[in-house]
Length: 138
Image 1 (cartoon, helix red, strand yellow):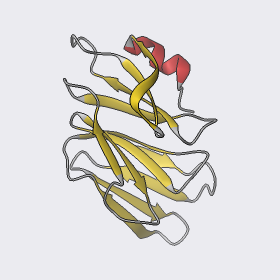
Image 2: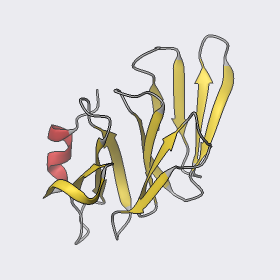
Image 3: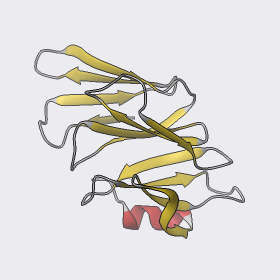
Image 4: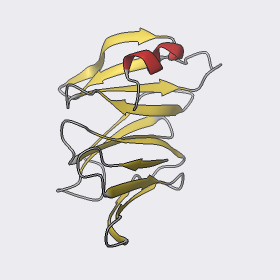
């Protein structure tokens, strides 16, 4: 998965299935940072629009959150989808809200919306097809 910073427009994030997330400066063409999930496969990663120091991802059955100023390892990690997680997206309006989905066709496939301040799934448990409507990534 590849994403360009929506703030600076010259930072590139590359999430690799091997569990590594690398950041590059497109102007200098140099690697500037890497994060480690220590889990595979890393299926999805997203930059928080409201706080660009936060990175979120799903790997294996867990969601993971990094504060890139603190460590290259996740500060928070929780199990979320029994049949493996597939997609992670931050809310566009709240830095503490994000959504994850499982794999289509699995019995426990669902969209889960999480709040970092609360350990329980907070807002809804819907079918995965709704994910693109609620947290569309542009």
